Image (cartoon, rainbow, N blue to C red; front, side, top):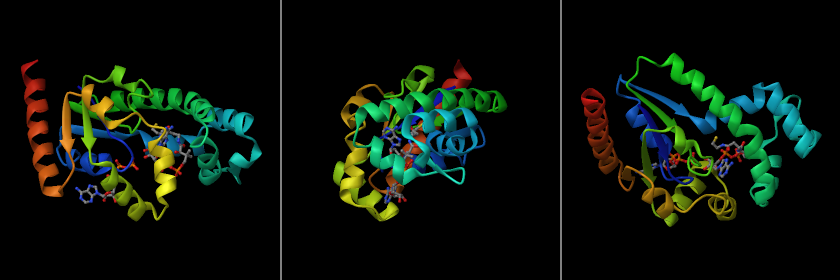
Length: 198
Ligand SMILES: CC(C)(COP(=O)(O)OP(=O)(O)OC[C@H]1O[C@@H](n2cnc3c(N)ncnc32)[C@H](O)[C@@H]1O)[C@@H](O)C(=O)NCCC(=O)NCCS
Ligand SMILES: Nc1ncnc2c1ncn2[C@@H]1O[C@H](COP(=O)(O)OP(=O)(O)OP(=O)(O)O)[C@@H](O)[C@H]1O
């Protein structure tokens, strides 16, 4: 079963993914981390990014994240171009991950922009992690030592939490860690049962 795990920036997806990872029947694919690795290792991606955004995109073969972030998070057209270059390669890479993890009953695909990238279409079940806007902004500012403006630029390029939740099978309210742990345990039980009864 492919389980999509989504939620806006700072909602707590990685935190929730780590909790699910404790169960031996799960495999977790963090799309954002894999995208970062692919953007530094894939020649196909690098060539296309340089063509689109210029030579400054890489320095000594390393992706210049700040440079790219400043362009794309203030320009939806540029962001769409970046997505069109990166997302197909991430999806291919995830297909390989599924093959490698065929023995796992639950393969998680964690992606902040699951719906926006249409990756929801490859998922059997979708979980959205929710935290209020003010909590998310505060948590990200603390985690990344960045400004509120930088967080809001990303949030403004993502689908609303309400729209995500309406299209999800399960919602995790990530207020306190204890509450989140309990919700993860319940959902894991339900999904594991479902797998058995299919
Ligand atoms: C533009 C980049 C280089 C900026 O890097 P930076 O280190 O500043 O940000 P980082 O990658 O840590 O992303 C922080 C958060 O921004 C949000 N975000 C990232 N990419 C996107 C996107 N394409 N659209 C909307 N929000 C995004 C996510 O919530 C993410 O967790 C980077 O975000 C990127 O490469 N994005 C394209 C890859 C992608 O789409 N990843 C998302 C899942 S595949
Ligand atoms: N329930 C919680 N209580 C307190 N802090 C939390 C809680 N959940 C997550 N955090 C903290 O909030 C920050 C954001 O969480 P996390 O990195 O899991 O979010 P994310 O949705 O994966 O973010 P991104 O979209 O940026 O990748 C982290 O520093 C994390 O440790």
